[in-house]
Length: 181
Image (cartoon, rainbow, N blue to C red; front, side, top):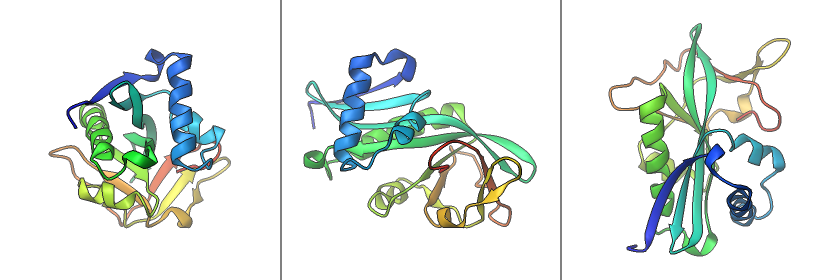
């Protein structure tokens, strides 16, 4: 892994060519199941870009979202678009992505959150992310909407010294088009 390097950059620092490389990586890693809305969700925050030599091999981003818990709006770093090329998996590149993103979350947010696939869950739990045990919902118009299908796949992480929210109270995420979580 000596030829591996990680770069952190804001979306505003990524030109069209690099954004095209990121999109191609995501399309490949998700077998064509990564939508335009999914890509939109991954933009506007910080990206962890992992290279093997000159080739982009892994990616993830963290974007700001608001989540309401017990009448308080929390600044949440929401992890999006974590992917590693198929031929490069199980070599620590996903952990390199997450280490970069957790560093951003630890410096800028009250907590981190993400929605994990069954395939990705082991990576997140191995890094100290915890399955949220409470209700999940969104602040959709005209009133909040429960999202029971997201329960069990939403993970939280708090920086050192932080405390996980009380699962007896729900987490209500800001609304967005496409998959809310």
